[in-house]
Length: 172
Image 1 (cartoon, rainbow, N blue to C red):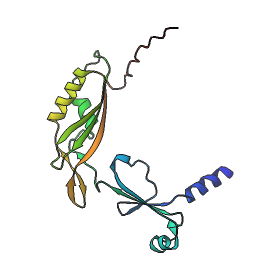
Image 2 (image 1 turned 90 degrees about the vertical axis):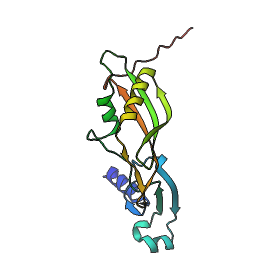
Image 3 (image 1 turned 60 degrees about the vertical axis):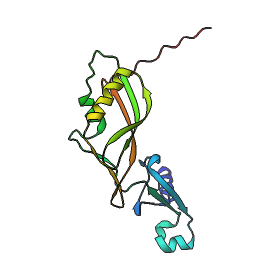
Image 4 (image 1 turned 90 degrees about the horizontal axis):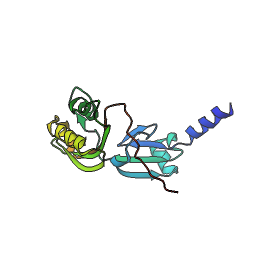
């Protein structure tokens, strides 16, 4: 009973979240990179008068860089799924990983902004070639207009195989 009471009281302590003008019960899952502005309103009489009793623990207003996220326009679903099926990487090839920051332009084209991790240059070249040939995206939108957005691509092939550990030499 005490555990349930503790959970109920912690939930009751949460502020009211409003994301791009829409009430939400939580802000979990929102990438901090897409937050344009955060404004915290105190639980005072003005805030409660505007938002009602649900604002009795304050209000957190989040403005995101866009209203609708960019969407990858391919039947495979996600960009990672598309690349997994497109990039030729054999089972006997070493496990390889790339982590890239990319930008989706307002015309739906993708460009790589930064290489964050590359374990195999040959694998990177194949991923970059597949990205060049990939279909365009539906760009992110804010107030009905196309806007640039960014994302992070994490791709490791063969799927399910762990990356080998780097050998460390310890001299004592």
